[in-house]
Image (cartoon, rainbow, N blue to C red; front, side, top):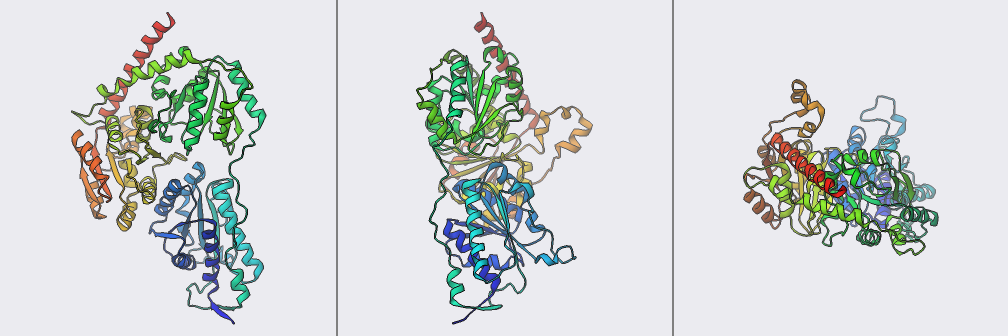
Length: 592
């Protein structure tokens, strides 16, 4: 018996059925003509939930958020031409942060390239060196060999992006017309139909391995044995609870201080890390700090930390540095550290349990760091209080206090991420922190937060600046369409206040026009145009009450808080000045 089909839709069904069999559960689709077979196939697939998002750039970042929250690949579908190029910012962020995305770019036949044909560009390796895998399926063909190759491509894409290398992959899929399911192009036999069914998965890729090299263990063990003091640094990253447990055991066993970027959430775990030095950035701002603490070695996990002072510190103390991660990624702007390819979690476990070397005692340095950390902490309530006048740093500290336990926090780039890292205190509420620190752009912040929120039963909060919010304003349409209950705290200092930290701020005639870029927009009108609840918060009681209550409403909401960038900056400088004086006084007594 012969069955009538449209070969394009049949081809797309085979591909997505195989991805669904691999375990893909979500897709983000932006409408287009050439991608019709892909869109139709996903609309019929009961195992994959699809979100329809008009703007491709928004779609890419929304998918990024879903992938971050679920730790699983998300399909992103675009039509041909510039639509596919719109995904590039999200692809870069996914590549830098190792987030699994399966980018499916519909295409015109290759014969139309360089012919002036409409909506036709060269899409081969469109994202160049920012994908982990590229495959062009070629035009759909109905012979058994080509069908098997298509299914293998789907399985390879899944394994590479989610297990072997982790990151975005691009599958380019060209189609000839006709594109619609009822525009029949072929009649196929039952053998072809049976071959099109997805392959069962038999061999599961083993991501974790216990074969950590003994020479790498010995290298770190020798540093522990021979050094007078050491340091652990933890950058942004997606770390498991087991990693943090092993970190606690290891740092306690050897009395090692831990400098941890706030964006990885370690400060906000329910169970505190005993040797965590929360105010490490403030300590590093003292030029005299190396007199107190000059680590001979540094063990680093995760991406590069937010604090710019760490690299300056390294240039003074010149430690032996070792980066440990499972992909041998280099996260070291100084280019001085050695990189070991190892599973971070298991590496710490081996070191903690090893009895092959003598335990060193670094506790005197640790005690001094803990004392200073505690004393610096006491400066924050006085300087950053918002009871009389709101400032950006105090605002962020109050937001963290208001967030419900077990919530998600997406922290925006520019000033919010720096305030979180430089000034936030340890709050043990098990807050899951998310960030886009792969390439650290301000694009797609709200879209990413919406993707995270769409996959969580717990409240999700976004803290973002006015330029980031404006830059991603299209994303509010997703919040409206799917009623995603994201709680957005919009800190509006009217422009690029992050540049006030830079020397260019002294050039007033250039700075205001070319760097500050104040928008003077009504975010109330913009937000309400998308039928999203909006309220401006003007006092500490407003902030505490509305942010707490909003978490139970299960509706998207935007809370705008207007701040004075100059006033906020003056408080940060005051805090750093007082902290530096405190450190200097301590060092005089410590040396005596």
